[in-house]
Amino acid sequence: MWRYAFKRLIQGIITVWFIATATFVAMQMAPGDPLSGEKALSEEIRANLEAKYGLDKHPVQQYFIYMGNLLKGDLGISYTQQNRQVNDIIAEHFPVSAILGVLAIVFAALGGILLGALTALFRNKAPDVIIMFLVILGISVPSFVVAAIAQLSLVNINDLLGFSLLPVAGWGTVQHMLIPALVLGLSTMAFLTRLMRSSMLEIINADYVRTARSKGLPESRIFSRHMLRNAILPVVTVLGPAIAGITTGGFVVELVFAIPGLGRYFVQAVQQLDYTVIMGTTVFYGAFLVLMVIIVDLLYGWVDPRVRLD
Image (tube, rainbow, N blue to C red; front, side, top):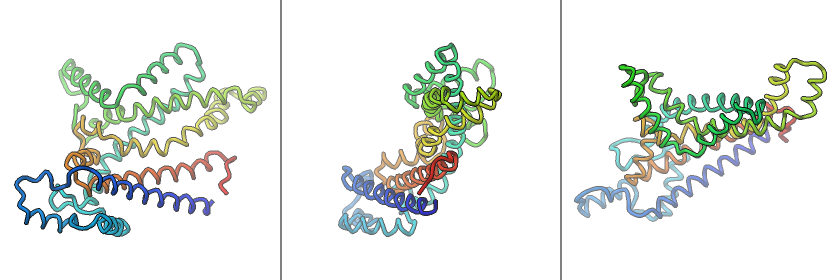
């Protein structure tokens, strides 16, 4: 087990290195430069700024400087935000995105597992048809459309009630988190519902389920101990990437609901060609995703005793 964990860790480090290298190359190939947004720069000032940020060096030298700083955990200084380290930006704003992501994944996982099991138990009946119709909508409609509709609906509900049932935007209380978390987790919940339904349909007619029924075990115990635990394995497999994707991918939701998360700074960095923030957040997101995948690989063996990690 430890040998497998070490092997997966080495593979994860190589993957993060590849992500960092690919991001650096992409930034070098992007048109423009971080100083292109500055107005009326003299050649002397521009040369001083390029020397300060190392932009006057050959790309190969810049790459080795960047990788050396990365090994030390230094993601650099923002080109557009005065005297702000990329590490500080991530440390200050990622917890907001993480809290929103955790709430969203809890909603998505619980909803997906329960709804998927329900549709399988009532296959081709009214609950199955209604839920699967909603699932298709959840997968098909983009998150920015869902976010806009949710915010507009909340405004109309507050106007109709004459008081603020839930805040329309902002951050700071549990009430601020509910609607953004529901919107952010909706598409993942729809995907997990389909996955859980397919897995449950395979389990329902399995030999060990029929054997359990023939022994006279209660249906509740058959469902919880034999069907649900085995059907949930595919969900566990994709849960790690789903956690990372939700936690780091709520850019649109954060913008629509004015949430001060890391996603907003990533979007601003792309717009302003802030290379260090783009590369730093991309590497951070990539490392987080790799970590979640490794954790899920290890948890899979714990959930399913039949799996042996050699």
